[in-house]
Amino acid sequence: MPIDVKGVSFSYNTGTTLEKVALENINLSIGKGEFILIGGEIGSGKSTLIRHFNGLLKPSTGQVIVDGMPAHEKHVKTKVGILFQFPQNQLFAKTVYEDVAFGPSNFGIKGKQLDKRVIHALQLAGVREELYDRSPFTLSGGEMRLVAIAGVLAMQPDYLLLDEPLSGLDPENKNSLLLLLKTLHSQGISVVIVSHRIADMLFLADRVFLMQDGRVSFKGKPDDYIYSTSSPLPDITSLMKDLRQKGIDVRDDVFSIEDAFDEITRVQKERMVR
Amino acid sequence: MSNLFFTYIPGTSLIHRLDPRTKIISVMIASMIIFKLASFAEMALIGAVFLILSLVSSIPFKVSMAAVKPMIVFLVIIFLMQLFLTEGTALFSLSGFSATREGLHIGLLLTVKFVYLLLFASLLTATTAPSMLTAGIERMLRPLPLKKAGISSFDLATMMSLSIHFFPLLYEHLWHLKDAQMSRGLDPGRSPFKTVYSLSVPMMRTAFRSAEEVSFAMESRCYQGICRTSLFDPRMQRRDFAALSAFVVVMWVILFFA
Ligand SMILES: Nc1ncnc2c1ncn2[C@@H]1O[C@H](COP(=O)(O)OP(=O)(O)O)[C@@H](O)[C@H]1O
Ligand SMILES: [Mg+2]
Image: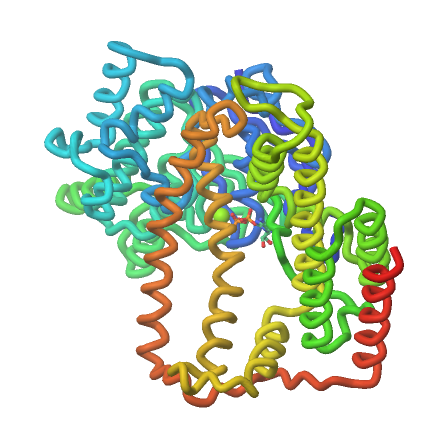
């Protein structure tokens, strides 16, 4: 069953001179097991939109239905996990372990089962074991972020939403986070990444939504996204385009480094045969 | 999410156009009067004054309520303390403490007083741009001999404008934090202790970190605090004196005749 967003509009500060329409008649659906990218410039309403998916914000008009339930029901928060921007700011507990246990214990999970979940989440997120009993505030920024991710994973959500998850990460950490998301997705979890720069993640996505001024201006497959919008190309795609212009006969419709590698080796082999 | 808490709501009403000093002095007078008053009839009159001012300034009532809402916990505590700790005729008792009729009276009155203070203050901040507010306060402090205490009115003005600018920032941060913890199942209605703990610890960290960042940023731009000029140059005009006099007369009438 999906997350269904039906005719949702939302305004901040209604009834004052500061009123701001942030979402206007949004209609979309996110299926179980999908990998979705939500793009759009800063201020286009992405963060406002995902706050509707677990009921943090209630639509001014329209409705959000998660697996058949209205999104503001408490139980929905166990299904839809959100990792917010700068998640390292949310840590508060005495130890890393306790912080990760916060989510599931709020839903009444106790004892052995809680322990299993916490350890599993910490391992998935790649937090080193010797950090489990440390205070989260003594960790490095990168480690704190992993703990925050574990905190959301411990809720074992069916839908995992991440708001600008790559901002402030170095390339190596970016890759390991994307790899983790890929793994989670292969285990059947729906992954939704929100970012103002989605080009380099296109190869992961099943579908793409583009937000513009509070509306959805594009819905569709990554390929269509590249050809039907004027958005920037992924770095690897521009590289292939450059190669083509230099007279090397490679395809330029590849979005991932693996595909590019295969394509270049294929062309190279062909040349050797000739 | 609502971030109307003591926010400036731009507008063109008469109250918006008044000099910040006029409004600051009026709020000071109103606070003194509010704490002098002792009957519910007088309170009702003050309420009427507030309603008229908020109509004239066309500030929606929900903006003023946004200033009261986050304080409700404190207001309830103040009320209960008065209710149970005042001596007098007992109304009912609860685990050893008895609520008194006098306590009820004093408690209600005191709670209403605090609510009024918040309402008037919110009217001031809603109709005055933060920069104007700072400029107004700085002007009012200038004649004081602050130099002897080792600070200047410019220092104070800087501190004030920094705090005013920090406020919405911290408030926004608090909302994001609340969103994050609520997404992890925090239920503020059901577990108030957990709520306070899981919000206040990260808030403190952020507050200190941002303060440090700002001080670095100011130092690296050679902030000296000797002579701070202001983009806005508030001037008292005829309408300010008229408005201030009218307000003083109304308050005086309430104080002596109600
Ligand atoms: N708490 C708020 N109060 C008022 N306006 C807001 C608030 N949060 C966001 N907005 C406005 O709503 C619009 C959408 O914001 P947001 O959803 O954060 O966009 P994005 O995540 O795409 O950058 C922006 O114009 C922003 O200024
Ligand atoms: Mg955002």
